[in-house]
Image (cartoon, rainbow, N blue to C red; front, side, top):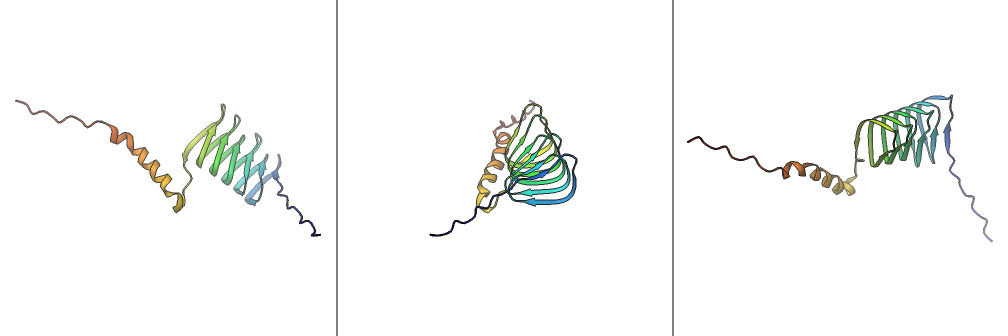
Length: 145
C-alpha cells in the first residue's frame, strides 16, 4: 500500500493592525492587510485591504479587495472597492467594481494582454474610435451668389 502524500496547505499572510512594513512582500495564497505597508505586494491569489489597512505602492494579485486605503497601482484579474475603500492611483484589471461608499481617484485600464490575447485589446481600441467615425460629416460650405 502506497503511503499518502502530504497535502501542502497554502496559508494566508496577515499584516496585523499596528504593524508597519516597508519593502516587498511576495507570497502564495492570500495577503490580508490590517496594518500599513509601503512597498509592493505580490501574491498568487487575493489581496484584501481591511478598513484599518493602508498600502502605498504596487499590488499584483488575481483579485484585489480594497476596504481600506491604497495609493499607487493595482494589477489584477478583478478588483473591488468596498464601501470603506479608498483608491488613489492606476488600476489595471479586466473586472472592476466600486460598491456604494467606495472612492476611486485615478485611471483604470484593461490588463495588458500577451500576444495570444492581443485581439481583445485591438477590438477595444477600434470600439473607442467608433463614436468619432459615426459622427455625421459637416455640410459643405455654400458659396455666396
